[in-house]
Length: 140
Image (cartoon, rainbow, N blue to C red):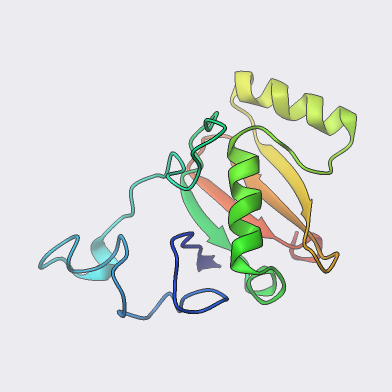
């Protein structure tokens, strides 16, 4: 798994998670004197969305290597905004209703989206809201 950083990066794909370049929430500028490996990113309440309001915490953001290769970062970020706002994408009506119930019951949330080049990808938020993963169906 790769940390997914929805903040802008110079790369059109995903930043190298081992890189120390640039200022992100792991950087020494944010946590002076603390080794990067000891810094835990704060759970996001999606600072990447302004409208509509996020309905739940997404926790730590991860993306599988295959999804990182297949899903452009801007499309993943847009889908993540939709997911956090309760727009479950292209799931069927039963799964949509199950996700709405999961918001109240605190169970796992699953969304499905399509990139502009028609690649299907999923976003799954674990029941405890500690981790949200972007993945391809073949990664499951």
